[in-house]
Image 1 (cartoon, rainbow, N blue to C red):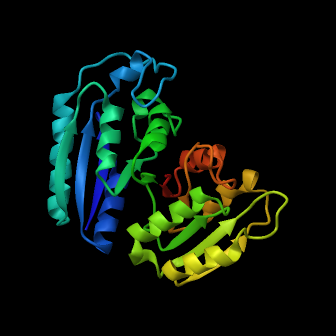
Image 2 (cartoon, helix red, strand yellow):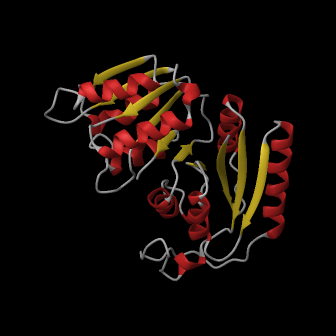
Length: 273
């Protein structure tokens, strides 16, 4: 049984994130922990974060709306009971919301987070600063989910031969063996190269976990067209390497994942060392 975190901030309750958790539970029962955060991270407001120093996010200081959070907790509990999902509730409404969330990820197998609603109040243009920090610092894989999506029936594995992309593929395979028989496309696209790097090695690994596997090199300009291509694929989940880190897959540089998240069409599984 996996432990999955489902995070809600302030007034936002993500129907899409809960739908994904419900889907995963249908594959294999999980322990679903609802993490309810304060409406704003006050450490960010003063320009300092335990997750790193950065430009302050200028948001008016507000008190945690206890009634709204309590209502969201009640809604979460009701849905879990209706769907027969084992659950826990963690109310992390201290001043330092993001640091609390990172600590939670240390003790979880997966974090599910809304690509549209996560701290929408500090930035509607996703991934906003809070979502970026969470993706950078999470200590477990993250599944970034649109509010509206179709349950995954196919998998796209982003691969470039580097450790980051291989690690993400392995983590996805370990967490979701139930999707091992789904239609799976392992794809690479690197300007100036026409071959799949270390093809023999990745075939030996991926074929053990994905029985319906196709390996391909994308011939189009990935920088311009990949997000359009993936957005047109229905019932698909994308697996990618680290987000905005030095060893990020050459197929999915920061701009790639940013654009895919921003368009709110495709669930994205992100894992890094």
